[in-house]
Length: 422
Image (cartoon, rainbow, N blue to C red; front, side):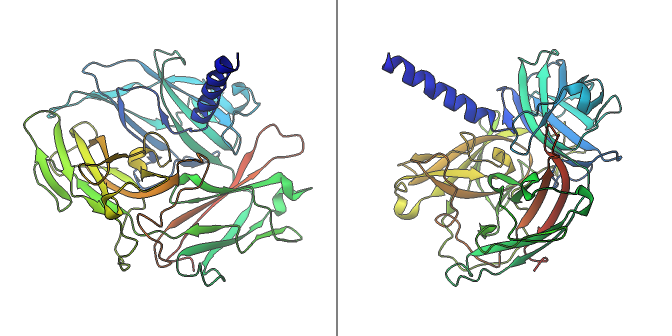
């Protein structure tokens, strides 16, 4: 009986963990998913309540004929668990909408259908602030889920002041960045600081977000979050890049292109550990992906796909003991999961991963994580190194739940850059 129960419990745990990954692909034919503020591919999917803000949704179905795709919203709490609120209470209009705009790919070797939409549509508008899970599925059947994406709807009720500081600890002052901020919450009339929940992201990464720290000091309606170790982040290094805007012109990061079969196979130059290299300042894109091309007019349905080979040469060309290596960035969903896990190749003396990518410009980095602890934080010190001078973007999300509330309202968002917010 115990032998039968153990795998069943393991399946439950793995399923629960999968459900905690809101940005997730469920269909093997879906690729090239992008959700961003209108006309800005380097932005988080954030809209302000009761505003004209819109988001662009783009994705490809790797088939040669159009299908019926629908979408709906699910209101969530600050930890992305479903909120105990009926959809009629948080959506004005229809909760299920059909994606009607699509184009069959042209002048490409790869067959696919590109779908796009501007959200929210006037027939389906979120009317409560908070975290929303966008669900896209086929034929109006939610069991045929294609993918899910996060959306943040903010109703600004608090003011946030933030700055980046050097940690006081000399052992961390050259490798980490400390975030200190205050929240002015006069409009909320708080009864307890526990009604506030704060989430801080570095470079839009939810896997290492710092959550639910309590304010160190409260003065009237101002809540100070300035603990020395509370919002301490590894500084990392500027992100690596791969320019794949053309499959004919081989950019400086491409080692070779195999055109003997379609789709093409592109081999990037092997990456090495940079933890012992001196810091070099250059403009990077902090993990964002830009779908673009230098060979056609429209990058959304006139660009091709290729298998792209990434390789990271491990120190001593040996597997890093007790650690798994992950390729992070928007290209793998900005999260530590199976989609970002790399495999060790003894023949190459390092870790490899093949991704099916659309033409564009990709920024990425390598991190490690303890194999024995799936909940452990990722570590960038072995693969990239940490330098306090590194340019990083930080996002501060402030949630509030009233005494009779049934979900966490998103009442404030602030962004600060480590280079300009000191």
